[in-house]
Image (cartoon, rainbow, N blue to C red):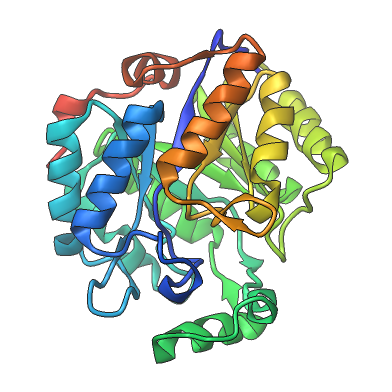
Length: 310
């Protein structure tokens, strides 16, 4: 892994995993998402990873018209790198998942690197009351859900996105996903430097033990040498501990309410910006400088904010 002198903080502002009933602080409307993203950027996030939700009930949506208001507002107010999901929700088709990234041609889009079981149902043990009917069903249905990302799916998203000049945050939930990425890298379809987001602690993917983090790191080093930039995503209560471990080893970090609703044991995070501020304090205590958006663009070889379609 090529070590950068500065750490890129990505903030995943909302997302498809958590439901509005789980935290009153989860942004749902376009205005809430925009405000949350702008505050996270001010706190030090160089990259904002963005999903959209239907403002009526908070349901995850890939309708580009739900993205447009917060994309334009965030771009007008910050110079943050915008990263649009192609993951959407495991319940969506690939065509549906691609719509926002194809419409807006962002600098970065996320890309899940393999099919997997994606178990959200354990959250039913923690959360008992739900405001909307879809929320309980959404979690319960993950007992019998495969998040489909076949080689054809990945190649379609990768090829069509690359044609727009979009680069990718490769979300790797397991060791096999690194090998899937190596397949596309060897074919020249995925081009370095690769931005690899190692995801830990989702039921169906690799676990959150420090040994799991080390295993992902060793494997990525062996497969990609100096042609990748590493980032750490710990789900739930693993967010800050794993980001800290990774950062001490030279990684970039990802925080945000998509990945964890928490700021401490039993304590809901008040905002995305609070999580960004927390990891920033830790990075600075480790004498790690925080990358600005333009430094992140340079590190990841991005096309520039003037080349997007919003």
